Length: 130
Image 1 (cartoon, rainbow, N blue to C red):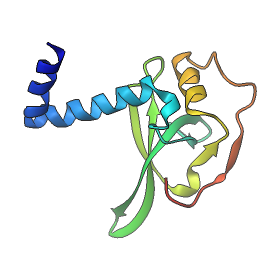
Image 2 (image 1 turned 90 degrees about the vertical axis):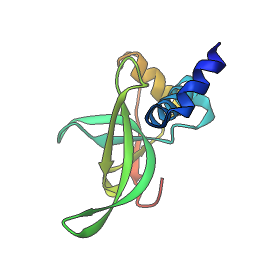
Image 3 (image 1 turned 30 degrees about the vertical axis):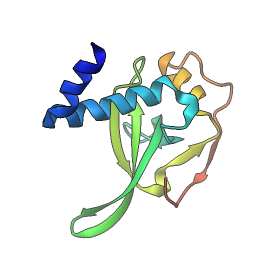
Image 4 (image 1 turned 135 degrees about the vertical axis):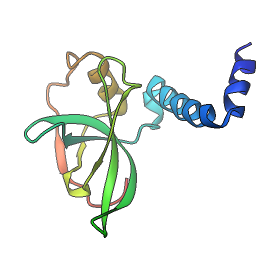
């Protein structure tokens, strides 16, 4: 029965795009040890002086005011359901890799910060790709 319902979803054009993306995200969050979420990173978000932990999803180039500008798409999950959240395009210099496993990051987010490691170590900004 589930397979039949999924078949209907993947054959409907607009629903297919949403369903496929949602399914991929849920699978990634459900199995954080499989490295599907990307690097665990910290960015200054939602405003200066506040930091959020997220996952570097992809590198991209955007044209702002006609000039190409490199950005990293960072998925910042919501608490306590990390399958929802925001995608933020951040300059590579403003994305900090963390010495934290994907599993630790998901635990941190699901717990609302109560399962915070004793120390979150931020490395130098990475200027390369995701």
